[in-house]
Length: 582
Image 1: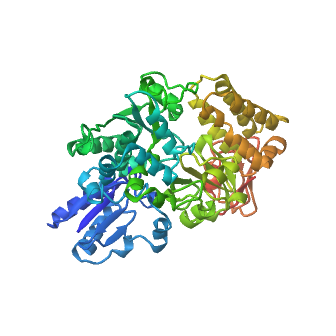
Image 2: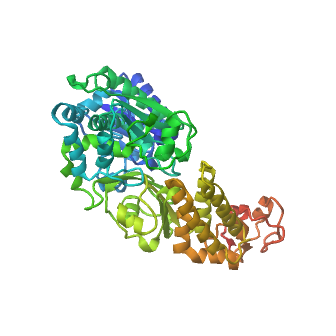
Image 3: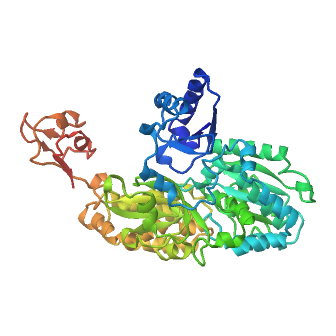
């Protein structure tokens, strides 16, 4: 019997380390010979801490939201009594979260100890690397990746084989394989979970890619805000070196390859490959003009290939199972699976991996179980600050590169921020533009100054100071920023604004002309009113920080709108639903 406690960042944040320590304590007290191990995030982030118990025959029982105080019951009932502790077991409904997915990238996450290479080897780890190096030529490896149809999962969706081949055929013997793990989109945590839960799959992908393009050195550029990911990567790399999977003459061949980690400072712009290279070289992370592309002149002006974590995590599976097996999933142009981070106003938030082409509705309702508190679905932001907003009217859109792009959004790295009827789309656009403006490297005038001007307009609109012509000015500035910015991050910065204007223009108009927020969200545009449901309990009056509520005991109260600061404290306090916002 074995106990596994999920200890990805989400699990640790929910108290998983304390839960694991309590299991170890109780097992020791009872004199049981049972191992307590760890794993990364299995994807059900909303159920953490998650505890999996495997019996001697490999049977699995999963317990969810397990806090230290619940451990004693599970130990007594399950580990000693041999019965399922049903009060803590995962529900049948929650089991569908994983049941409707197809996991390739996340195949090992939550299943193995990421700090124990033996568990990875036991499930076929490094067999794909051995196969590629000992029985395939570099051209055959590239051809297998080409047959798979694997495209870059970092945002652009560029064919992976083409980038590898471009670096391979570039003149020179010194070449570099770089992994972009600088995951900076708000609400995105796909790459982090792979690094924390299955670091060896990334290492394999880099070794195979390095062999295919003729590189002897790999660099993983990961943001310093991911300390757990960095720790597990370093542990995995050291173990791989000890076993001969990294270093000189791999599998007795002439091919040598090793990897090092570069911890980035967390600049969003370093997700752009030329800015990433500048940062690797010790320079300020700022993009440069292309061509030349990194495949010709990249890191230290040498041929360089850059893929993100998710892209490379597919590689070992493809080599082991064949490109055709990968291509059987997805659509004709968008093959394979894609990992998405479901966040926002969703009931079941976490990581999902689905075949490309699955309708957006199936992801949000079939897997994510719909909107919190059963409110109306309004929109989903895809592709992060560089992406766009997809409205409820397009919820049947297939999730693939082509169809998502048609909506004005992008697949991006895989963030899905779900919004309900209480979300103000103008304020949402303001939030993402504020992020982009702060993260601009400042090299381009249009990106540096244009995003600031757009943000100023949005801030005016959300506080009721919008004026006629603001929408048209936003569209004009957006067009110039897209045309005048040098890198992809600047060129896509206006997307959240443009898509919200496209699909929710009425909300902009209501803010500007009616001085009202359709979603009743923008604080400066709210009016709080006490209805005849008021019992006169005086609780709201006592809680009001500016004493704007007046009235006698057991009689309907009133709010002095000239004093009210629209903090919403009265609405939160009222037990009779007597206060409404408009």
